[in-house]
Length: 462
Image (cartoon, rainbow, N blue to C red; front, side):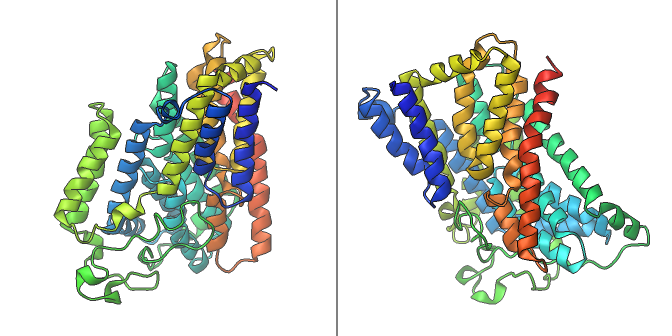
C-alpha cells in the first residue's frame, strides 16, 4: 500500500471516528498529521508545525470574538426585536425575518450552528405560538444560516477563499456567496409555499395581529447536541450579573417582557453595529486582513466596557477553530506527500471531467450530511485543486460554488448539528414524526442538491 493511500484511509477514518464519537476532528487531524507525517512522509515535527495555518487561525479568532461581543452586549437581541416589530403584525413575514437574521449572523462571522442555536428557539417559539409549521420555521433558520455562510468575511468564506487563493485558482468570493445565498433563498421560497406559507399570506390579508416579541434567551445554552458546546450560547447581556449590580434580576429569558425602550438600542449597541459594518468596508473595499481588523474593532468595544465583555474570549468557537486548523495542518502533510496530486490525477483520469465534478459534489454532500461541513470544505476542496488545474475544461469558479453549496445545504439533516438543534427546540410536535420528516427532507436534499448545483454552476455555464 502506498503512503498516499494510507494518508487517504487515515482521513476517512478521522471522519468515521468523529461521526460515531463525540471527539473533535481537529484533535484527530493533528494526531494524524503527526503520525502520518513522521511515519510515512519522513517529516520532522517542525515541518509539520510549519503547515499550521496561522493566518486562518487569526481570522477565525477575530471574527468569532467580535460576534461574541455583539451577542453579549445585546446587539443581536436588539436586531431581532427591531426586525420582527418592523413587520407590524404580519405573521407571514416572520419566517422570512428569521431567514434573514440567520443569514446576517453567519455573514458577519457567526459559525452556522451558533446562529441556529440563537435563532431556532425564538423561531420555533413563534411557530408554536402563532400556528406556523415548525418544520417550515426550523428549515428557514437553517437555510438562512447557510445562505449567509459564504460572505467574504464569514468562516466558510474565509476557509474556501483561502484554499482557492493558495492554489492559484481563479477567485471570485462574491460568486460563491451569491450562489449560496440565492440557492438557499430559492429553496426557502419553495418550502414557504409548500409548508403553509400561502395560508399565512391569506391570513395576513385580513389584517395584522398583535405580535409578542420575546427577548432572545442568551443567558443559557440552547438545548440539543452542539459541536461547539456552549461557546456561542452562553453569552450574557450587557447588564446581567454582578457588572449590572442586580444579580439575576436582569437576566433576559424568552418569557420576560421587553424593557421600556428596548427597541431603541443604546449607544454601545449602535457602535457595535457600526463596527460590523466597518469590518465589511475595510475588508471588502480596502482589502485589509479580516483577522486583524476584527480584533481591532473588538478591542475598541472591550476598552469601552471591559468588565461586561470579559467573558467574550471564552465564547470564541475554540472547538471549531481546533477542527479547522487541525484539518488544514493534515492537508499540508497530504500536500507534502503528494497525496493531493495523486487524488487530482485519479479524478481527472475518470474520463469525463463533468462526471468527476459531479462525483466530488456528491461526496461533499453525503459526507457533510453526517460530519462537519467545515471539515469537508477544508479537506475536499484541496483534494479537487489538481483536478481543476489539469485543464479539464471545468470552471474553477463554478465548481467551487457548486462544491461549497452542496457541502453545506445538507446541514438540514437531523444528524447534523443544525438539524439536531431544530429537532431539539421544536415545540408541540410528535418528536418521532418530526425526526422522520427532517430525515426525509435531508435525504432528498442530499440526493438532489449535488445534481441541481452541478447543472447550474458547471454544466450550463460550460
